[in-house]
Image (cartoon, rainbow, N blue to C red; front, side, top):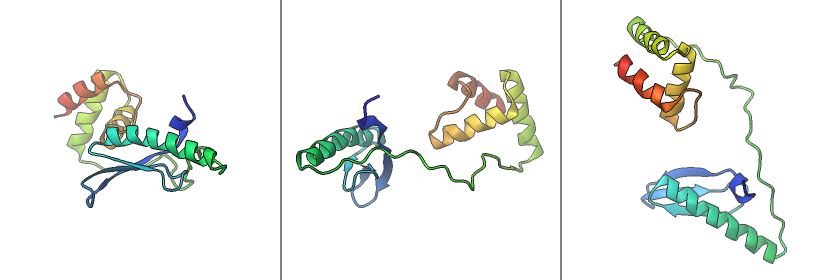
Length: 132
């Protein structure tokens, strides 16, 4: 992985610009714009490279990529109340897939937020179909 790819990125929709803005919080003023999130992130990689090149050419320091912060208030545990019928459907779907109920729920939540989870997408699609 290149040093450029290690810089954290934040992507968000801009109503004013009618597109996605991507910023590199570690590099002041480093940003990119595109009509899609993936394109904004790709453009940001070019912007990071240009930002670093310009800083070095000017003799300015280049900050190292920051590490993700870990909020001590988020333990990774949450209690969720749900209707019994939904609980049963999810438990049945998890059983058919051979994964724990917790693992299935983590995957479903991660999928909804665009992050990765410990269950394969193939298993996820079958579980969703069964839970309906």
